Image (cartoon, rainbow, N blue to C red; front, side, top):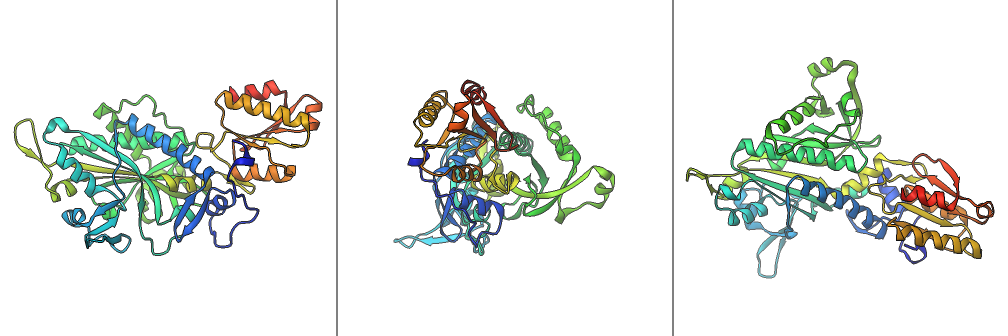
Length: 438
């Protein structure tokens, strides 16, 4: 993509009303713009990051055996009355009345709707187990939306729902999703720690939050030093319930708790292996048994002909929230530092002198070669000073910067900068191409 044709409104200064790093940098880097309190338009660069995160989430959900569908954002209030949550949910739910005086709501979550859909489709044990998911915009009417996309009112979320014949099956589905979440966040280049959590208005008696460690995180986190080591998730057979239960139990046994739930006995046992940091919640999983299926009259026929109420779980990942969380976990004074897996482009190609015929010819040629080899390139071909181009590339945080200027070309080299380390190398054109495509 040529920057001269792109929409990238980069700002030099942070807006006065932005309080945290991710909000400041998302506005400065031209990722989003606020359109109303807690509601944001995603500009082209921000949308590319959002789609990269969404792709990883979708691939790991599919790998875990979940099946994708798409539910509407507006829901009937009658569904929520079936479960008993309509009046209990609170003012965060945006309630709407349509022209026929039917009560509707802008969905903050989808337990009721998915239960009704599956209730009408499932008849017997042959239809279970099933895990269904979608990636959809939701709305919660926060009393005080702040911190940009970290606590906005409208947000993109992946929510999945499992249906099993009994508690053992439901816990197996829960464990499969537990591992899927660890794989998901690892692919994004961040470490996420699962922590036992309250179930809140979702309900149930088993729940884990997934916390990304970030110095500027929203809450203080205590965790075992084992979580600082890589966790090998590649060889786990998630279909083997016994093996999977052992793996998850072992991971959960590593001490991890928020500051609201400190356990003095376990702290004493952990000793100097206890670590503390700040963290940001980016995912939450729940097992809640028959809370919704029973309330909404769902039943399937078992092998012996009896009627069984399925056990359920739900599993959320804040897709849009992750954009802010990743920035909180990975930035410096100059701007964002994207992990390569979610970066909007891999390379920022800088033409230092667009009025220099040789410079432009070489830069254009390198752009064509890189894109032809499948490398995502943002080509700064604007008629701007070099300092402005460097500042733009630093603030938007692409993993690599390839600088083509007349001085370097006179010596037969270009400059390749690693945004994360700041390391700069002078390389031949062929070597730079090989490095970026290898």
